Image (tube, rainbow, N blue to C red; front, side, top):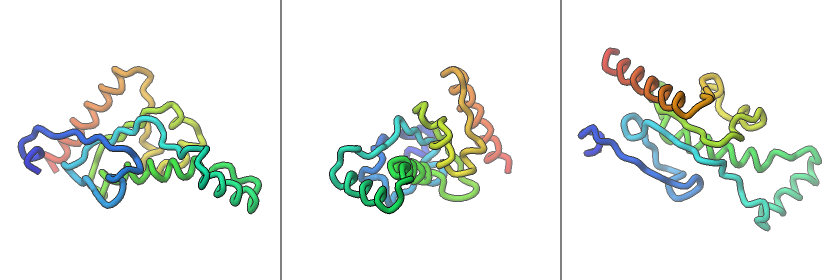
Length: 143
């Protein structure tokens, strides 16, 4: 909280599914941006996962999305660590082309799907990010 009060901020890097993935929330000024680099798919050669996939396939031969579901559940939980209430805000950066595929995109929460933008260039992404924070900073200053 000292960093927040000083206006200097902080940066926290963590691995999805690691020790910080459960039970710690970064509401309000404690977390204003989540950056997901890549997609946290389980190791497809994991023996436990192979047994689970065989079990699921025996029950329903159409089950093919277990890996995607598990991955996106972890992504959505990570995003939820910084968005804790209706008036909270944070930028969410999903840095992997696969997030644009329809099978993945539809597994994001609807409020993210409706506001998702895919800037064609890095410069535009940075500009949109700056506008996002400026807009929220001004709206919080003038409620």
